[in-house]
Image (cartoon, rainbow, N blue to C red; front, side, top):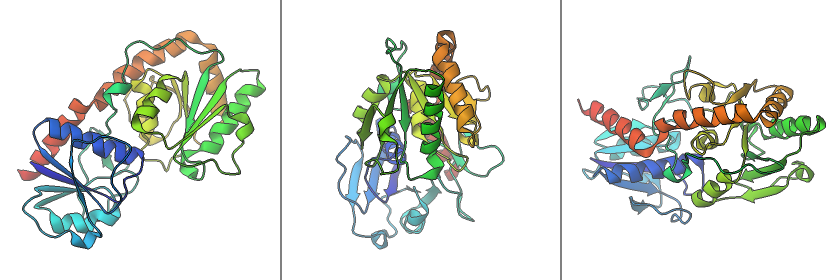
Length: 309
């Protein structure tokens, strides 16, 4: 197969990390993979795909070069339709538009039509034995504070709640952007901006707990998946996208997405119980196997094959 992905920008995002990892995995299986973008050349990651840089999506016309063209956003759908022998829409954070076939998924979001395939966690993130825990514990809070659906403000409140009840921890923030003036930086021990995939892996492996306070509007978030693979126990909100990771929700502790106090209580519970952390680490590694590159590439290949039948 010759498969092309259309991406609007080449910056460091969870969606781009997944697209590039999937393209690499498909290339390793013998398929020809091309990334088409209107943005600047990729600088933060190596890629085994071919790259095509264009000035605008109107340059995408019918071509026998691409058997499948994958639109990764609504804005690339028309270009994908024009360029592809066959077309598929790749849904991350939005509903598939009417009359567009979404990619079949390993898991279906409960009560919704959006389905996902291809959430890949880099193999470097997987580890069988966790590192020695830090004292005080390092708690990772990821996401852009200005994106309300990421719930970063709730994460800050949850940490403040835990500290009010005498929990000692170092808060580690990571974001695609520099901190806003509204962020309570006096509560943060480390702040990282725009990390590459390798740097993010190192940071994840240096942490003891991941806090994922995303709101219900979030349909895709790579960091909680990476935490499970890295054997870092997590506190997550009980939103459909996180609950869909596995039918048995014992791979993390959960709290309502509109309740930072409950999120803080779950954080306290995890901080105080080493046996609980060990159990969650083991289950997280088990659940995360579905996101290994070979597993995802196999599902993706079967889906594309199914379109041709």
